[in-house]
Length: 241
Image (tube, rainbow, N blue to C red; front, top):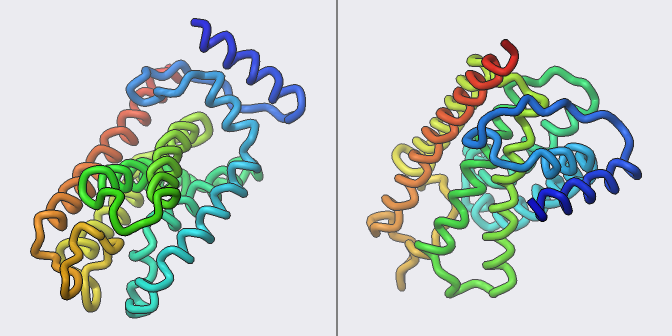
């Protein structure tokens, strides 16, 4: 309760300096709307700064993937930098909402991308890669920045309708990503981000268990995103009567 009180006061302070109306809370169950209402309001009021942060993250992500992209055929580029694409989706989603642009599939793509990549990356870094072979600041930046993506995802239900068609678009895109990342690449090697856990003395080996563990997590998260998106749809319909 004390935290809620402090949060509400912070939200009022932000509202004093950042004008504009935010969508009303629909009182959805915690399993689809886990953030406190005051935090949702702050995130939505600060939509434009959040857009800029995500665009900066997108630029950093493409820089981070520069070597892998250089070794990848151009046709496969859209499916390689998954996290930068996800941060681009959420930036465009928030911007579309603020500009009153209808963009149902984009909103759900952002929802899927932020949950899927936001959860997959900390899992891989903490349980597969470990801190070896990378600077400590970058290791923890990757973990914490991706965890923040999951938080962002749960702002979207306040302004998006989560239609079945939009969920289908996102499920097809991220399901396709799983296939080409881990099972059947478009061209050349698998398209997932390079895993340090797959590194050997002579290069990268996808025969190591880490490949299967990363693939399993990715597939489970895609199904989880489908569940949460459709559940959000159902709960929004209930709330609307």
